[in-house]
Image (cartoon, rainbow, N blue to C red; front, side, top):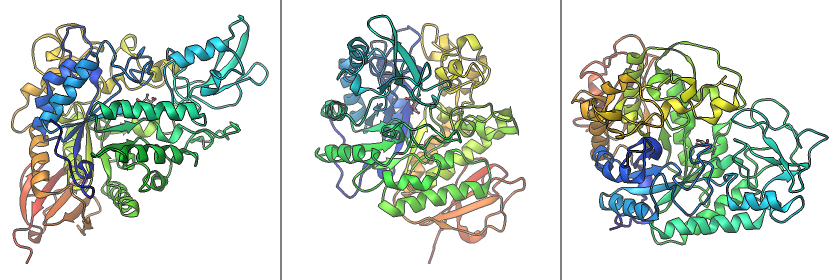
Length: 545
Ligand code: GLC
């Protein structure tokens, strides 16, 4: 059973809560210590019970897992560790039966070095049509063709050994060396991805989260980067928009709502506007809010910018506080003594994964308050798995357990992203806290017991998520509509009105008492009545006259 079709003017992503599901770490059904689609099916009621309307699955295609699925060897299959196409079809049917849409993760910038096209390119040699689908170039002397750096550390080029055994050309990889970049100026690449989109749309998926949208097209001359921060020759090139226009047209060819939501990292959030033109992506994540410090002015600024963005092309905001690349919200908001970030090739690393001493309780209070902020704003909210349990980042994984190429390629300077990918705790006791009957692929710390889904009571972060998402839907808080900012007389307190509801967030150190005219308490992240430091509340005008 498919979800009921919605009209053209109203789409599910206008105000959906989308649960981001990192398949490897969600639930394991066969005891190999690795999450799988069977595990997702078993635990679907957890997601439906939260009140989510859709699931974004991180990549679950056949992949050698050099970057946990972002290195794809076959775009039309399922990683055997996770199941097969039959399991996938079952998941789509079971999700749809619960009113949950399914979004896949589309990874167009690069494939796996084990993709048949790349194997053919290596075998065929310089100048061949097989190499033209990637970015192969001769080096400059013994060095790479230009000075671009990989996001994950080290140079963005790797030299191959030619079929005759001699050191040969170099290929471009903006990420790990196992992830060769496609040449998106090549018509065969365009045609292949049209077909991949149709393959999954025809199987019933409801859209795609699109990886690294800003990276698909590179400067035609591959000019050297000037060395300062963001490489404007490898990212955010104007020709990239033609690709999104093509996919939007393809999606519009179907009779149902299909979402294209982009991961777009740009230095100026206003650059997102171009990606959100009415014939391009439906949405792009609002990372601007995610990277703000816990300060009312900063949070309000980012929220205002994203809301203003919506007014430009009518694309609803896609709010998020966490994902599989960033430190968990509890940990980011809990930093009490920030540390200088390590040197990184990734212009956003310091913002995504800030370091320093963490006060977990403070972080928890703030993450709960931030949730109420997000859920009161118009747009859809993407909720990364484990955030609903209030999980902090696992910062002290042993180096030997770390798998993220960011850790390895940066020579350990950056700890990377494993700490937000540790398998979820479902029960406080039992093997792997209910994640698996086997040994989990990343070790879970003992303190995970305290965050287990089954151990969360009525005052817990999980209960707050369920209540807040339900209340948001009942009050229509996510629906399109104005955000009216209210004066609070306190720089550390932000407040805005959405219809009859006022959302108040206190980032300061003293209590805030909302004026009586703002209404009666509906929901709070800490306690009813006054809004205590690091707390938020929703109030509702009883009679607005
Ligand atoms: C995106 C993904 C990240 C991945 C990278 C390369 O940023 O979110 O997890 O490593 O692209 O595909």
